[in-house]
Picture (cartoon, rainbow, N blue to C red):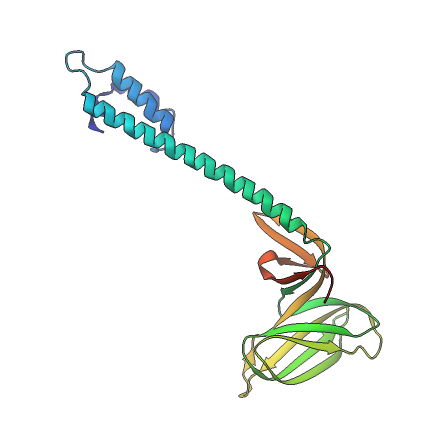
Length: 219
């Protein structure tokens, strides 16, 4: 757009001062176009072809700006929809990927615990800890398959309260496998932070992407 260089220094400065960066938006473009028309040489008026090309550029810029505004609006609406849908998780029973140790609640009865193995395991040890961090029981399993596994803590002492459990798994050569526990329970809270959704299960917060299944009641 070489013809725009004909704009006088004073006119160019007024546009430049309006922005601290080198980015030209549609308003700047329009100002330069008007300044160019006002400051053209009467003896050498602006070439019609060049002027038409500049108008086409302005039209394209306007369309792109409108597209960007539309996309921003759609993203905002999608965020509201996602929030509304995620809020419905409250009160649902979910199973989610946890960490190396996760909490659960016992009410004097047996409790089903879940964990995930990255590959087949020869030996698996599930250790249960009370609220003070003391080991109160250990369950040993052999020949466990890759993926999600379940085990029942019999809770023969009829313990009640909050507990945690850890899983240690080993392959046939005694190598350690990075087993992770599963968080299961009713969603008590749904939080939104930095565009992400988090659910609280058994007083533990996990990201929505960690949720593996959702049901109305435990099946």
